[in-house]
Image (tube, rainbow, N blue to C red; front, side, top):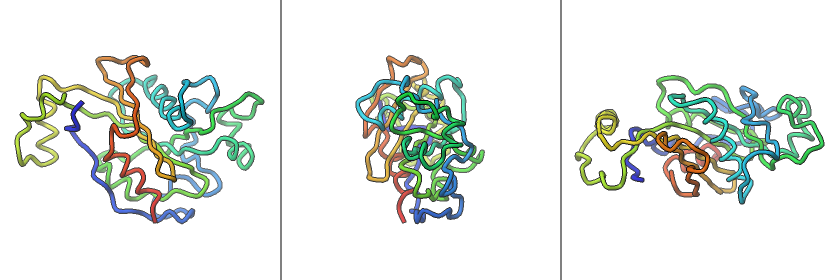
Length: 222
């Protein structure tokens, strides 16, 4: 898959991540919930994966897949499930994490809706996460071209022109990208093609969407 997409995010300037809300903080230091909607409650019945972060990414992919296509970008806080149960029992109960069953190590919690019409990199530059947040994830739909079409991309196109050119290309493919990062720099991503909309066709890897991963990592810098 080519990295030529209809709107690849650029790296935003780093924001403060002192643990206190700054500009548009995604959740408070005591309750990282934002909109308060867990992807699937962090239950152990979620996707089986090699690492907690990969599992969280696949859980978010599964959740957003259930919402269908043509969806807006969605931002998630990733919180330590054990810490959430101990420090925020009420929120854990809302997310279905108050039982005795074994839960996933990381719980994705959907944040407030991303403002419509605002460039993604500009929005991410306004984020400052509190200490309770271990990582974050973003899902976004894009139109991409196969590697074989890279040579045909006209030179000198601006973002809007490139978006239109990709949208009009006969070989374009719609893809949902789910990218997650942790504070320590660990990253993971999942790609789901619209024409192969099946859990068994989801591609995972740490460097599938490096630009977006860098932009998300920058939200923890300060």
